[in-house]
Length: 144
Image (tube, rainbow, N blue to C red; front, side, top):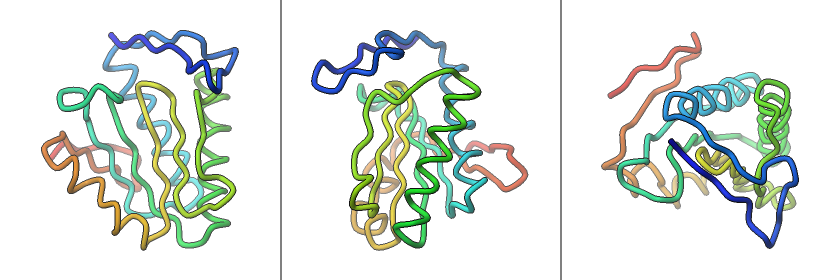
């Protein structure tokens, strides 16, 4: 089970403490992937990082092809998670620049990149030992 405390530097009142099972965290990651797909996010990848990192249980990594699209994907994620999970992000970084937006839900972190930033930071390679879960357009997942 994941327990999360909101950061005191940027607290979100509705997200003071979150407790989810691994299955619920995985479902949240799939919800985020679906929201990204709704805005035509590309190369959507889910990484199960719980066994290799204390940062989160899952990363959702998405490519957008313009700063406008990256921001639209981020807004779609925020809206869908708020509607379906009644949760605000603990923190959001990079919205002004729009090259890499990070949305932190504690147990799940979404990374929305422009192509050059995604290639440069290469999170899939950095976390290569993590469980990789492909998100298909049919909205199902498959573990590799």
